[in-house]
Length: 174
Image (cartoon, rainbow, N blue to C red; front, side):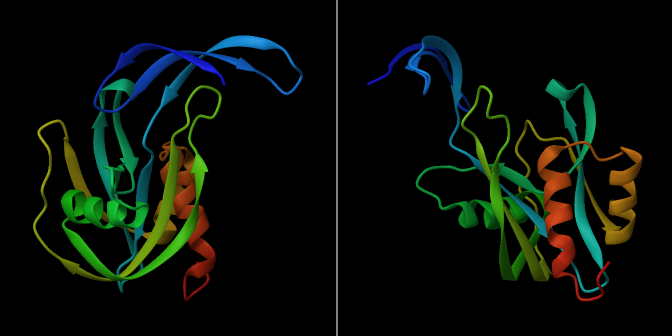
């Protein structure tokens, strides 16, 4: 069994030095961040608009365009997290849900897996932003969001992937 030396454990991440034996039989020490995972939502309204959040991210150096998303709180399922985050961050609930798959955000040093969903048949409700969240809620034409991807205005990985994976599911083939 591989050994792990804890370095730091916080509310979001657990950093440790892990001694591992690789498939080539080399033993190494690797810095590994353990993360509970997350979920993100491509929420599409009846007017062909997608919910994008303009959110301040200190670690990224400023404002980013993002899908509503957040960390899985155990014992939540990824879809429960997606529903909760859509309601809390965007003030929206949905009755139609479709899984778009999942991906590892940064597998070179972290085990975070983000689950992507598409949500439709939306109703508005109150937001519940946390004190650390600085968020503006915007409804952007889906085609405009794709143009922002092409121009480099959207650079958040989960948002890029979610918007592109939702494209084949649109009624008008946008």
